[in-house]
Every structure is written in C-alpha cells, then in structure tokens.
Amino acid sequence: MFKFDEICELIRLVGSTKVASVEIEHAGTRLRIDGVGRGPVVEASVATPVVASESTEGAATTLARGGSEPAPADAAPADDHLHWVTSPIVGTFYRAPNPDADPYVKVGDFVEQGHTLCIVEAMKLMNEIESDLSGTIVKVLPENAKPVEYGERLFAVRPN
Image: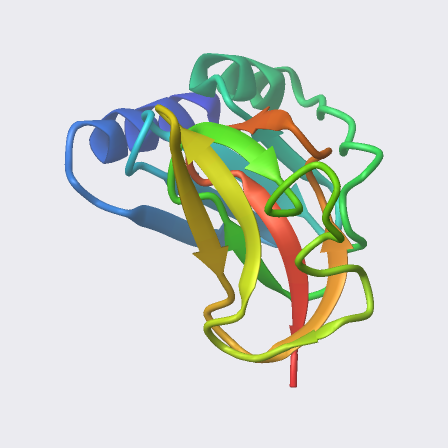
C-alpha cells in the first residue's frame, strides 16, 4: 500500500509537469495519476476496487484514511480488455445529432475506427467524438444532455 506522503508527492510532481499520466504498481496496489487537463486525477486499486476522484485532495484523503469511494452505479464491470473512449473536452454529452434522432450507437453495436459515437458540445460548437478503434460498445456511461469533464469515460468498447 502506498503511504499518504508518497501519494501527495506524486500528485505534486505530476501536477507540476506536462506528464500525461503515471501508473505504478507496488505490492498488489495500482496507482494511476492523470495529469493533463484540469489537474491531476488519482485512481488507485487493490485487486478490483477503484478509488477515483475529480478532486485530488479528496482522493488522497480517502486513500490516507484507508477507505474507498464507492464505484459509480453505472460503471462498467472491471475488464482489463475494455477500451475506454474518453471526452477530449469539457462540455455537454449528446448521444444523437438532434433530440428526435436515434442515438449514434447503442450497447451491443459494432463500430469501426472513425465511427461517430456522440457529440460533446462546448461553447456552442458541436464536436463529434469518433471511435479510435474497431469494437463492440459495451457501456454508455454518461446520461444524454449531461455535462462531461475532460478525460471522463464516455464509452466502454471491447476491441475486435
């Protein structure tokens, strides 16, 4: 298990550099710190539980207490073979091009690389988010017309 001081130092280092992410595994515990965008985001796991937080301070405090935050109810089951499509920007998530249209993709759909998965609206610009690999959609995480953050997981895709 990582010590609180070690985690805090890693968060400071990643936050003060342009490092995209750091992932360390030690004694059965995996720690990942994503540093690009809105500041460091910490994920840690022991076996399958995951601690993730938008606030690095809250995550570090939770880890220091030895507790864990509950996984979101809509999180996809832990599967090392899933690929996560994440939001490249902060904005509003839309599953379809307009309110009356069918969604771009549904769970179970096969998508090719470059296929449009959704739209993230930012500052009145509609940004089409495309699949960066071919595979099957396993999970759609955000609700339609809800805000998403940079780096937030949007889709779980099982590569084919």
